[in-house]
Length: 301
Image (cartoon, rainbow, N blue to C red; front, side):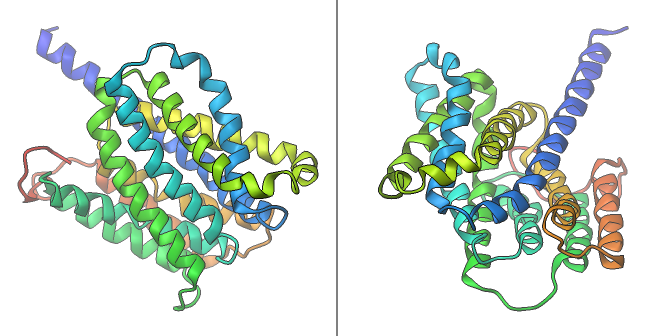
């Protein structure tokens, strides 16, 4: 086998592992929407955010041994972006429907490539087509009325900031250890959320104790594992591909919302799911007709 063929085979293999990592993230995060929606009825968004990130950060503490100025800077920037995202999500889900929250988050499928194009990256025709099909499917599945409340607007802010996070992560993850970068992000958010929650945490300690299983799941699985897998996955796939894979979130969120919260999932859900899966297949297909660049940039999206 030629060296070039061997390198190409290795790249293809890593690309597949990147897709698998982000798909797992989508599966796990789909469970966090209904769980967060349910949790904020028991205690405040500030206490929820602080508790889950403190648990998550504690797991990665040993990875803080190999620090330098560059990784510390990049990790704090990523942590600040994620802090805004999770804060908007926790506060927004106090009033927003979990299903609709999944739909709004899926707007990353178009926000990320558009932000990437704004910053000089290429935009492919198949990315636009796949995004349009995915959004149509998600709209059919999740959007039940045309009104937007404050919770929905906060979830849209979560989506926009997460789009920026994915692009920044794509630009920095190749330079650093994924474990150390994850640890810095988690501790940055843990410290900020602890400051936010300080006035309330003593008064809600008993409630936290009664909901420790939810906190442990959100902290260990829904936060620590997800952010680490996201960091790993974006070493091998682009931010636009990761955003498209995130369209699995509302599909899976609808399933878990039906199971955990009793929110409905019927024919519209099945139609929407079929369209999202079609978009994912289209995004990975190879054809000279859909691989054309609509916007030419310095980097491929």
